[in-house]
Image (cartoon, rainbow, N blue to C red; front, top):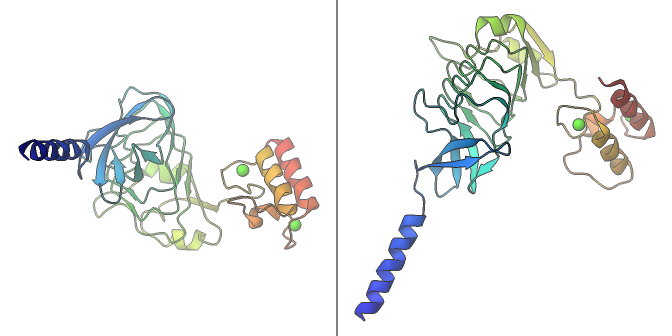
Length: 256
Ligand SMILES: [Ca+2]
Ligand SMILES: [Ca+2]
């Protein structure tokens, strides 16, 4: 009997020690092989945040250079937020890909990422904190997929530096330019344009041979996943057919 109890307790302790708890910190590698720190947000919902959530404590070494892809999930936890200071001062990064599952970008998240030239904000984002993209002096293109823009930044500070809002172009979803022009934080941008997704049928930001293949599949009735008929109907005649395929091929060949 005693032995059974001992085994039961031992098994319980093993379970407890391997199960993570909310706020636990762990690391995982990105596809580029960069070690990144994460914080468990909810063990129950299996969600996590990039970084430790602590001020001035980046999730990766600030000496990292080049492109970095924030994973959609790390150690089985879906990445739903970019924590405070997560990439603060990572001046050598030239590209940061934010996964679609992210809903919150906290204060100072990308502060001082001077090497970034463009950034795409996923459509599910519902909060962008103060100074989140401040001192990102290299930014020339910001693409926001948010359909219903909300005020960003705070009372004392903005998300973007005035150098960015003066010289960079903000691209927003079709039909939302006026909304952005009326929303605090976004309205500072001097140039706000609609996202031009002509021919980009899989919405990955570029028009290439994959878009041609997917459009042909669509015409053949194969229902490719994530296919945008609006982007495929390049001549706006209400149907997707071989004429559109020809035009998309032209776009690919012109290298636009
Ligand atoms: Ca594409
Ligand atoms: Ca058409």
